[in-house]
Image 1 (cartoon, helix red, strand yellow):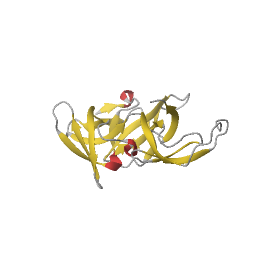
Image 2 (cartoon, rainbow, N blue to C red; image 1 turned 135 degrees about the vertical axis):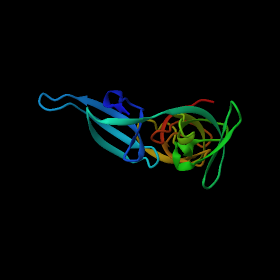
Image 3 (tube, rainbow, N blue to C red; image 1 turned 90 degrees about the horizontal axis):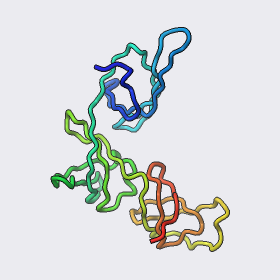
Length: 188
């Protein structure tokens, strides 16, 4: 067991029999009363967010995690298949456990986080930005770059995002996978 001085962003802890990732923390020492640590936690399995305050004297159980690079092979209805490029070991992970799964295409690299003690995958992260081709959208309007108007566009992974009006079918766009939003047009 560790104490609250070891709380940092990105650390995984076991709390109420669930695994939680610390998203944000703040050590608070009020003028009157005992010090405490205010945290924002994210449940690794469900994605649920929780705000919790730990007293400084609290003991926490830190979970050892390790990030490994895996290559995305293919998807099925229930999940995705990945391969470790070092030893060619293949694993299967539920699609809901992958952050940004809608923007994976075959061959793309994904960071998969493992619980070291149990050797089980916890979740995966697609790269923060991906470049994909627009496979369908309404025809663009030339010169319409001054407004903030958008239209739906389908990219090569069959995900739909909002893009500016000047984007056409066949254009390549850079997408922020964290919030599934258009970032910029890419010249290919």
